[in-house]
Image (cartoon, rainbow, N blue to C red; front, side, top):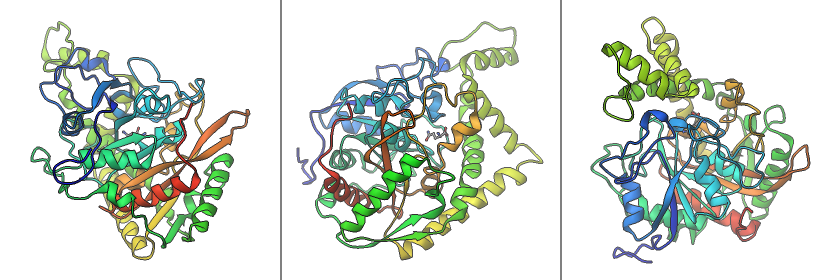
Length: 428
Ligand code: GLN
């Protein structure tokens, strides 16, 4: 469907929405007990735009509580299963969104991506996941996890569908002062006119065998060959900070912001509340019962890194590292049109495999957090299936990272790759 300004938009298709985006008249839970029964008085801008264009809301998707997680196991509703292999996790935190699209339940889904939550589940479920540049889509109605990193993203079967969705939801919004979309970019036209030549940088430290599982590296190697075949020049580039410093910086900043953003959930304004003798007991009881383990862990970590005496040692240093990483990305984009990495260091792992080991779980985000720290657009693209150690055939994924606000160009390269790899296949 073409809207009056001449841009094609998505219309008339069934969509599903991660339960972190507010929907008027429908409960929004963030998969947390603390929001049980809460019905928001307003609808998120991106959801309003998508539904306003004539698409049908199938429902709200399960997720990791407050978008904290990489496996979908941190939900008050229980875990989401991976439709490709139900003994495996679908990734997280937009677990239900990726699973719904991969299973063919929804045509397209919206998620949120603070450190990889759209791309990593898309990778593990074998579908396309796009995190736009920070500021390309309004965050109004996106329940905040870490506001300086959060961005709404799209999960779909093909790059073209992502482009149609971007035409629909990337619009100016006075309700979000960080939204810089001007609503004039035609993402669909851009994917119809892909770049034919260019130099791409493969980030060496994120494609090394001591970090990335063997099957993922195999798929990556084939993807690189395919891009070479298309006429792109591909060089290895070194970006050690991304491997050594991005995760600690991300987890300090995101926990710090989360500890502040989640302070509002006291059981008074939202969700169920207990009877208590005084205010302290009320906060203590409501927050102890309402939040899950991982959310509590992050609130504690975040409060700690912001506290007097630790602020300079942790939060301030993490911010400096963030600036350094953004700077290094800008330098690399002077020489390379796009940067490439795997989307996730492993294929879909088993339910329960990392749940009790937060550090291993956090390591799943090693390839994705850099784009959030620097506000860059990044696309997760299925690049074939590979055999896991037990013989299961599981999807692998290539990540394309582009310069800030070059979202349409990232999608154009993705479209070209996808076309070459073969027409998009349903995941199950
Ligand atoms: N897995 C990361 C985390 O737990 C990313 C989450 C996200 O992007 N919302 O913080």
